[in-house]
Length: 426
Image (tube, rainbow, N blue to C red; front, side, top):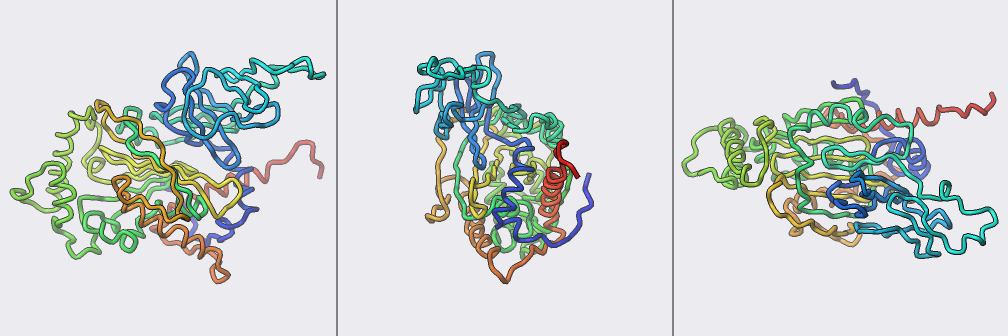
């Protein structure tokens, strides 16, 4: 299950170099399955949403037969984008430049003055270019490589381990994109370890155990289990039911804290039992979740850029997207899912922010204050990576998931760079 990871320095150029970013694009981003969004965002035929990654824009469209299909968002006449980023509905996709029109299946249906093209207008060649599209747990994935393995094979152990959450039934409760002045991996790294909690999120150690966090590395993907409803050994209240546990966990789910008697283990059990009592009113099925899954943060990174903070009633989903031209910038998609299948939760509109403008999430969503603590650090980390005094990342055992992420990335880069054109000589 866990891989043997070499604790070697990670060169900073992997985070700052345009040349390295191009290698990533050519040999990794275009070869892997990428999470493009939620299937529920395109419920009816003609509904679509876009997925922007690097220089590409992709349309995910619900077809007349109920399936989802992905096409590159580019008119095959002169390269115009057919749709702006976002969600919408289309009976057809008409280019705003010259009016070439495509069906929702991507087929070229109409051109202006087709007789004026001496070479002809071949719909088979000039229809929208498809790419692979598949779904898992309500998430839509796309892949630019026609020869890549099937999605479920790519995901490895993740579907089985997360099956009990039934994410396909969950609702989007919050959705935003933040442009951050850092490399996409700088952002992934920030959420791949609990080592930063005692400094960046010191207040959370009253109810989150960063010391006993478990780290696991699989083939491509990784997991950490961060115990909650128990204090960190670094906290003065370790081994007790702290005020934070009483107020932020037990009291919040209806436990009578004035009458509660017991230690940390009993507090975890009381919290889990109270959450299970709340779940039926939401339509949430927690029957297959263990006490740990109800209490703790099960954090997954699906290579290369999808992360989950999975809890029993809510889950934070992060998608870390590379900037199309600047390795020192990225786009961070933050989606909060609510395990409330029976609740009428209107789909919120996506919000847009930029750290460069001083934007914060505090007050905009639950947990925004926690997210702001990470957002504060990320541009400063990226600035430090560009210092002449800094050469390599020096990582420890609590950062094993970062090392594993780089090892996986290296495998893709080496496979791509070692692939030889059969027509080459020598």
